[in-house]
Length: 542
Image 1 (cartoon, rainbow, N blue to C red):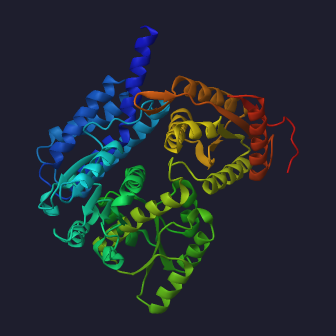
Image 2 (cartoon, rainbow, N blue to C red):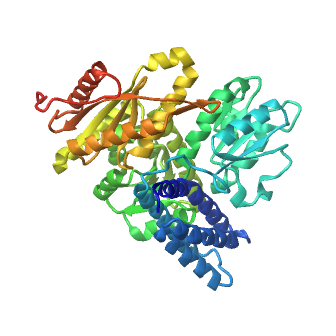
Image 3 (spheres, rainbow, N blue to C red):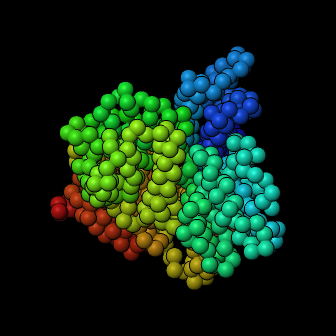
């Protein structure tokens, strides 16, 4: 096999794995439809597993093929597959096994080279409003963001649309002469676990009713002049955080009492980890990164108030939704839970459907809030504060386990010249291109952030100086091989300089490592374009 053919096959394999999140999202939608008892859901699942069974083997990903064929055969052999807890559990486990298989394959192919190709898979957006320039503009923006877009005048009832075809993003155009957009939002938001992940109102006058919007379930209100700048960012953020099912930790004293709650949440496609004491709950928090915590107020075995206060003191969990469960409905207890930092208080016995809707809503909104707080609005990478916090966490972990790691600071060479000659929009495209190259090149376990301006930071876990050197070489090669696209089939070569510091050789604190990497970057910039400099071999320990 010649080199050109090998490159083509490798690119095809990367593109196939790049579609993994969207394929899994479609499976989960069909699974939700199956749970709701839709008659065609089982057939749709069988068809999707059949395609994955064939395509996985064709592209050389045997594990994906084996898992999919196993489920396809089971669905074929069973004349009627009722949505029982056993059957939905089996299908849910199969989807999660596939998710793990795609993750493993992504590491094998070093992540996608061309970005995801959505094809028949992908996120769905539904636009409701009168035809016109604004509607067409939003169709184009959302299509470029990777969404499959459907536009309609608002004549279809939400209940008439199959669950597997429900939109992830619903956009309503307020029109004084047309149907009430707030009433339409209320109808869509009443769909329970199958409601759109986000409902956006486009309000032409800018006089949207905020209180009514909250009541109707509207997540955001944009004016037409903000659509071009805000809508693509909002849609991409939603797509990044929407794929995996919410992860929930349930801390409850008695497993027998917890079991019905676990079953109800898992039936709604949530991942639930049960623990009977706060020590186990705390260990799970650091290991599983949940989207929400349910904690029982049952001292002294489960002092949920103390646990809530403890979480709110940790910057990593300040925004984590917490719901307290209590044996009695007491105003005094409610006040204490709110003062401790809880987001909600439920008195037992808890009605299963209320709990499910509450957990899904809180978890989804918590994800979006954390995403906006912790990520850079342009690139989607971690922002400066979160990157430095992750550097601190990596250092603490390495210190406890006797490991080494590296920290790289990257600066785009002559970025001001790019802005001056081509404009700031092209400058933004260059930064987006660089962030994509980072994602393609580093490992999934590494942490990438925007340090500020045209500077980026990368935390390379569990590696030494030699490993960091290999990665910097790969980054330079990737950038040389793929210049930044700037429109009209034009490209712009991008060169960077890098400064590297390694723990523990170059510093024993996050601040010391950042300083050493910054100084090394300064030397690299002075030495010429496209250079890599390491910190001194024996820097002062601070």
